[in-house]
Length: 501
Image 1: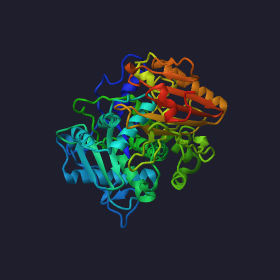
Image 2: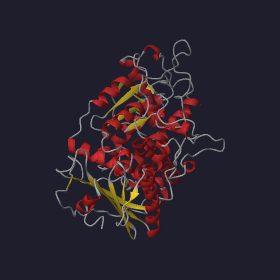
Image 3: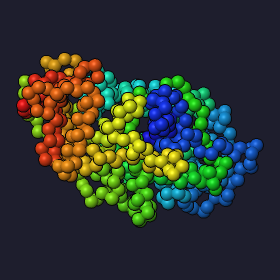
Image 4: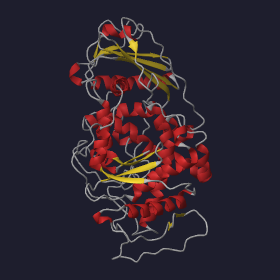
C-alpha cells in the first residue's frame, strides 16, 4: 500500500479559502496521509550523542510484543541522520519501529521487513519507467474521460504517475514483502518514522491476513479494500504520531526537507478518488474498533468491505451490499467492446468515483463552480482547522444512494484517433436517488458547455474545445441510469442500441 504525503492535500486546504488554485505550491513535505499536518512529526529529529545517551533495556528471553531483533519500542538510538543513513542505522530504526507498531497494534511480526530508502527524484524516474499494455492504457484513458477528469487526448497513466511522484511517501509491496520509503532529501536520504510506521502496518497486515488474497481488480474494489487497509494503517500511524509527541518525544525521526522541483499534482481528479480510503477508512476502522477492539478489526479481514459506500457510510457495512450491474453489448457498425489485458472488461468507480466526478469542477474552476457545495467537503473542527481523522467528507446528495455501477468501453477501427465510446450504467436505491444523480450530471454537462440536440430526447453534444468533445445520451429508467458516449450523435445508437432515439 502507498502512503500519500501531505503535500497534495495541503494545496486543497489552501484552495478551500478560494485564495489559490491547485498546483501553485510545490511543497513536498511528507507525513503520510494525515492531511492536517504540514510538517512531519516532532521537531526534534533524533536522540543523538549530543542530546541524550542511548538507552537499551535488557533483551527478553523470548520474542515479545514491543521488541524486535534486539530493539525495544521505548529505547533510544544514537543516530544522526542529518548526513544520511547507512544500512545498519536504517536497520535499527526499522527494528524499533516494528516494535512500536507491535505495541500499538497488538500483533506480532512473524518476520523482519526489508526497507529501502530512495530519493523522490529516483522514485519519479521509476514511476515514469513503468510500462502499461496499450489496451489497458486506452481503457484507463476512457475511464477518466467518463468522469470528466482527463480529456481523451491526454495520457491518464502519465497524469497518475506524476501525481504519485509528488504525493507518495512510501509503499509496501506484497509480492516482494518489502517497503520502499521516499526521501525528500535527494542527497542525504532521510527516514520519516511516521511513514515507516504506516507501511510497516501493511507488512503486518500481509503477514497475518495475506493482502494478495483480496480482489482489487477495479478502482472501486481497490478503494473498498483500501478503506480497511489504509484505515487501519492510518489509525496506527495516528497513535504512533501521538506517542512521538508525548511518551516517545524526541526519539522519532522525520523527513521535513522540501524535495526537488515539480512537486505539484498534474490533476486533482484521480487524486480525489485515490485519497478517499485515507480519509474515510480511519473512521470506518475506528467505528469497528470502538465496538469490538482490534480483535474486531481482525475479523473484518475475513469479510472485507464490499464497496466504498460501506467505507463512506460505516453503518452500511454488511447491511447494504451493492447490486450486480451488467452492461449488455448491443453494438453495430464496427463498434466492439474493449478487453483490457489482465483486467475485467468493465470499470467500476463506486460512490467515491461519482462523488469525485462532481467535486472536481470546484478545483478545476478554482472555486468558481460548485456542483457539490465545497463547504460540505472539508471537515473542520470548531477552531476552523481540518480534522486529523476524516478531513474530507465524501458524502453528497447526488451520490448517496449509490447501489452499483459499471463502465464498458467501445472502440471502432474506422473511428478517428482517440475516438472511443462508452456505456456508464449506475443503479440507485430509489428513483429519487437516481433523479438526483441525473440532475447533478446535467449540471456537469452544462459546466462543459453542453448543448441539447434538437429532435433527440436526453441527448447532448459537448464542444471539442473542452477536451471532452462528444455526444451524450442520459436516460433514467426507474432506479437505473444509463449514460452512453460516442464521437457523434449518429454513433450513439451504434455504441449502445437506440441510445439517441
